[in-house]
Image (tube, rainbow, N blue to C red; front, side, top):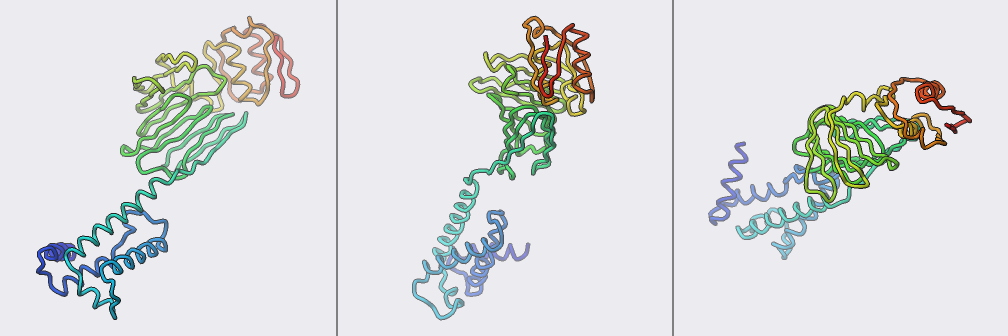
Length: 318
């Protein structure tokens, strides 16, 4: 702290033109020892040293075009104008380095799950994503300084690490889901008409492309976005029912058989064909955990009264 005060006082005297030889040397040594890595703009010490040496060479060449015998002699000729110009160049160079770093595009990584597969991803900020079957998510290996943004297709449960200065945003379809630190489930498969967002903890803000309104969801809130009409509906639900897949459970609450079969296809990696419009629209409530496909179909057949046939990875229902 004492050295800092001494340097500040010396720097002020440079502009009053009454600094002595020692103060000019002190100021010059400060520039020579300037730690440009404080802002973490360099990838390593080698890059820092390279840029620093280049800056120093350009500065001395600018202020002292006549080659001196030793650096100590050069330092004695520093003037207030030169010092001010040097600071401007240093500041400008550091700003350009920072700008260059920030403008570099983020490199996205991608995690994909197949049918009947789930994965857990831990991001660089400590957030954890559980990716359901037949889904994909893109995310930067290192987030930017101002935003944490990921892109989802399919279904995932997010447990976001809190960071009030760096919002976490999930882009899926036409929705942008923004949080600071919370947990929530998003389901958006291309075959689904609705994008389904359910909040487990904390608060979630949602904005749709082309709409000014922002929806703020609390725990137990569900938002359904119709991808065809752009309409939005909200409901109060039990979040555990929508995150049961993380516990290897399938819960169907008054759902059409056609929608249930889509989930079974992803869950068991099969193709199911329903040969009856009447059966497709039948609504069913059912809960199962770690059951075989044949057991689930048997239970559904009892409830709905249909017949089925399993042939390898193909299922026929009539």
